[in-house]
Image (cartoon, rainbow, N blue to C red; front, side, top):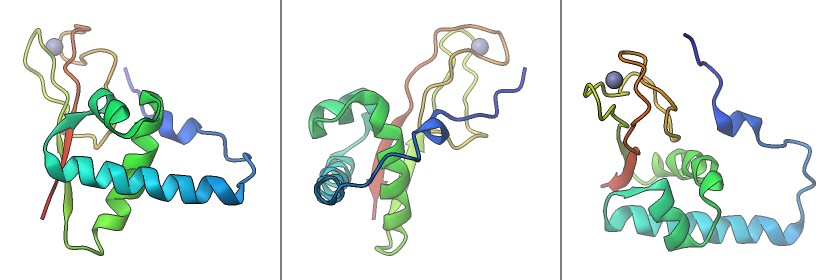
Length: 118
Ligand SMILES: [Zn+2]
């Protein structure tokens, strides 16, 4: 079973960019960056820490990761893993949790954790 689509590609591209929202997004990403430097966190942790919806975390992480290369920092992803067979989702660089294990089809999948290292 191939699941090549990723959820953050489904974000609406036609949304008009308001001047205020750009500033707000910068603040969110700075807060995310700060939280990631503090230690490993799941998307749910980050949504609470930064005050954004959990389903928005992945797209913000993408931008944070892009900005890190200029700072000599790296976004480290501790991959999601199957709790039934131990399969780790290391081969795809995804910020969202897979829904099922390709190895055993189990649905008990741990959440990926994110952190920033210098
Ligand atoms: Zn499995």
